[in-house]
Length: 59
Image 1 (tube, rainbow, N blue to C red):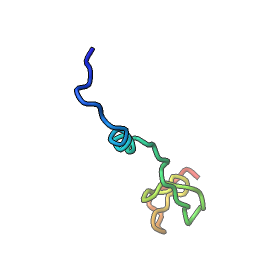
Image 2: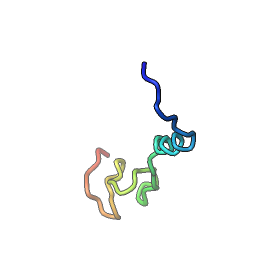
Image 3: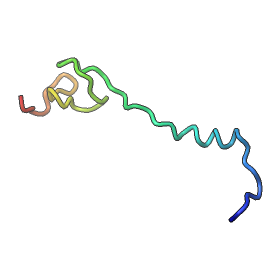
Image 4: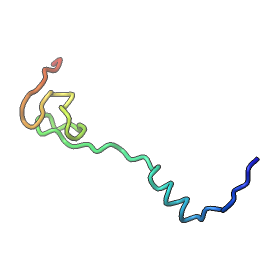
């Protein structure tokens, strides 16, 4: 089994691993139905985007 030639410092390892953190998706409130939806996407519940209905829903 191989052995490290030079040991990496704690700071270098932690700086590399800082990007591995998982974050929750950003959600905004739909102005039409007031439910949470992903940013910059059509609301899956009411079908509105930027105040205009762009798709029909099964309501």
